[in-house]
Image (tube, rainbow, N blue to C red):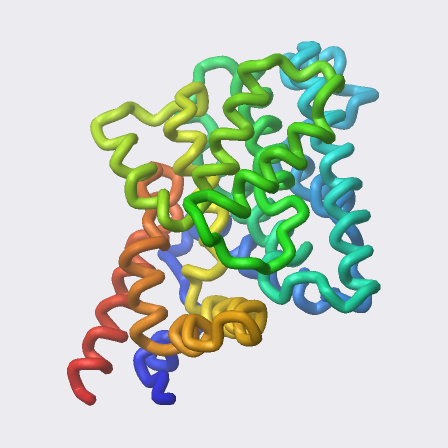
Length: 306
């Protein structure tokens, strides 16, 4: 199978050198470090969450009580729930790994990629989304919880109906989070976002934010941020081909044609054009729309030359 279009853009991408460019370079460094430790020296999802909180400058609980960020009961409940979720994800998926059945793509490395990707997006958005540090900290914490839960208990199966696997993850997360102090609205937003991480829903999710001012208080924008974080690693040329191969391995036994398609140039083009969409101001500040378009142009040029 010829993959000239993908190889044509497989160099390490760099945006102009500024604060936002440093965020994407830091993200790429984080992803490389994760891969260096996967799976033999895996630090665990609790470690991943702690690292993400440090990147977002969320204080430790011992010092956070006297600061605007961490002073509210909602924040403390979300933070405690996120740590419970991180522990549950690690326990469940590590047990799958011990039985040699952890998914090849929807595994703990994918969770970590999504968490660090979300951090990069949130840091790019800091100062532009909400006037209240307290409120934005709560919303960041909610989104970290969402990304920890979004593929909980995923076993690598393909949806046979819309949002099938995503509903299973949402239901499993809700069972875990019941009785932890989260209000019904937060639980409803979490479940809705997880269900709509189904790739088939992504274009509609991005259409929902057309003409809407960006805010972390808007559930539609939270949905888009989740979708962007979910596919950010795969959209980068440094990591996209290897992640496509991991997804192909996940599908190969039950869906061999889909597995072959996802690692082809046309499969990569479909992913970039239909799934790897970037609408948030944060993603544009990070240059993600540009790097996506450059890959699309390179693959189209390669396919046209065949």
